[in-house]
Structure formats: C-alpha cells, structure tokens
Image (tube, rainbow, N blue to C red; front, side, top):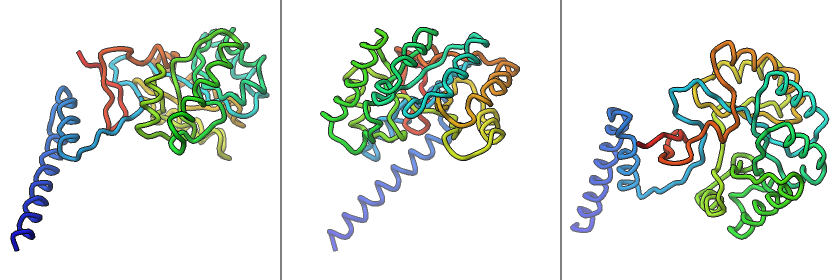
Length: 261
C-alpha cells in the first residue's frame, strides 16, 4: 500500500512538472526561451543536442545549399546561374563525389563558393561508432584540402540523420552541424512547379534551403527561385555568413540558432 502511494506521488510530481513546462512554453516571452530549455531538461532529464536548422534573425537573409553525392552534369549550369546573379552558396560534398569529380570541386571552389563536409561515403552517422564518424568526417576533409586547399567548418549529416554522438564528435572536430528549414525535395520525381512552390511558399528570415547539385529540375528552376527571393527583399548568402559564430544557443524544439546577448 505504501509502495503504491509512493509510486503514485512520483507520477503526480512528474505530471505536475510536465504541466509546468508546457505552461512555460506557451506563455514565456522569447527572452525566457533559454530558461525554458533548462526547465525541460530538469523535468525530463533530456539533454538532446540538435543541429542548426535555421537562424532566428531580423535580417532578410537566407542561405542556399547544395548537397553533392551523385552526378555532376547539371552542376555547371547551376554555377553559371549563381555567377550571373552574383550569389555565393554552400556545397556539401561527399568523399565519393570528390573522388569522382575532382575538377568540379576545384571549379566550385574557384567560383567562390563555400565547401561543407557531407561525409566520406554518405554514411548514416547515427548508426555508426564515434571512431567511424571521425573517419567519415576527417576522410573527406583531407580530400577537399588536397583538392583545392579549402578547409571545411560546416557538416551536414547524410539523410539528416543524427544523434547526440554525431553532434558531439562533429563539435569536437570543429564543425557546426547544419540541417535545413526548407527542403526542395529536388531529388524526388516531382515537377518543377512543385519544387518552386515548396521553396518559395515557406520563405522566412534565416532560412537554410536544401537543394542537390544534380537534381533533375534544380538548374531549370533556380533562376525563378532566385528572382522570387530577390523580389521579396532577401539577400542570399553562404551558410557561414548567415549563422552566428559565438554567443548563441540552439532551440531543442525548433533547431533555431538564437543569439544570446
């Protein structure tokens, strides 16, 4: 009987704690977000690490990014469109792509774009050991440096798959882990208008937009997407120019990178 009452009290305390956190989330002002996250960790025991999905900013800036893990025949047209519009972006490269298209890696670099780490073999990092994660990240880093001399400071996990270990190892190696807030889904068998709609209807300050360098329709729709963002007053920048590099935290709920004064 005493044991049952004790268990009941513990459940009641946990329930009350969860209710308290929900009330904080609903009614706390933005400046209290950091306290909210600490309260959640205290109640739930969670210390989940998250990547940067987007940047909370008053500035009308967004970042275009291109993942490169297969094919390159459509990449020159993408680069020409970016040049025409005087836009610099971020290309996340896998080691297998660097090996297959070394000249294209140098071309992307020479045109002034930022290179990011997309692992050596496009591995699902959440399913492998810490040592294997290090090998995946350091392997492609070395290949990119040997190819064009550029060092990478941003990492995007293949498939968007991550866990605490992935982010911890990436941070240990000096990387910021980057996801996206707008997904073009240009790798799927969808039409040009659907890609345009997906990328434009969800436009917001601080967005990180995901494309692929060899998507079937990516090069064909890119100019129209750029025109839309420019018409709406957005500046398109590389990810490293969008994100904060100090005095920030990342919301565990939304993945927003938030400046902390």
